[in-house]
Length: 351
Image (cartoon, rainbow, N blue to C red; front, side, top):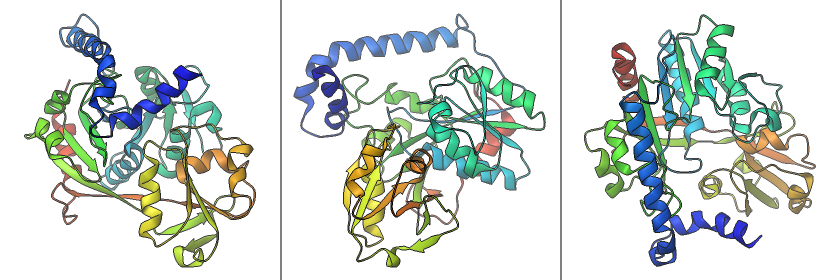
């Protein structure tokens, strides 16, 4: 139990300044992780470990840090943009938190406990085929077999899944940046920041850290913000209200995402006052987890909603969000990211 508490507390140390000394005992493990990560990537680059190419180009939307950073809204944005350009995309995902084995199709009626919360959200929102599988190659092959008209695949996460060859890579950071910029377990990084030099684009979901951005000076960088203004009913999506309708009520807000503070900040920006209840990313909710809101109104993210609709009681609302993309300077006048990705798709030069 004590070791479990230490592990759960590590992310707070990774992103808090002035606590480097508290993590120094983990540095040898971090150095070992760096060496093993570099060796594995080198083995793929020299062909000792083989990567496999699918019949269509693949766009990987991933991150260097552990935990959520806003990849799923970006995947939804990218898929919608590709469809406007005449592409027929499909989505593959690891299905983290799900119980299914092998490659499986995801439908709007699928169970989050079986296929994962993010794939279910993608299936309900994207309007394109979604498949899950720990083996991204197998998931992509299954998707193409079931939907031969698909001509591009977007992978939700999978930056380090080198067995799957890709035509473009997008790395997403949220407002926490790279934290202390150390590798696991002394920091949140899965790979060194130098990895950014080889990606197609970097997207900042929130304020970008200059020190982090310098690792990718020559890489196109874009700003993303998530906009959510109207709430929908948890059990009846046809019910809609705005923030004004919720003011004056006893509000509770819950979020089981990579950075719950991001959702709470959105609610505050809408002028709402609430009691915040953060949960771990991909948390498996029970009815007891929601009991704290028995005397008020519950507000949650879409990612939480796909797991809570069957167990929530009382009044509950969901805040859907849409991604908006623009230049890293903060201007949203010219998205730019789509053109960058289309150029890569046409060239398909990234291994």
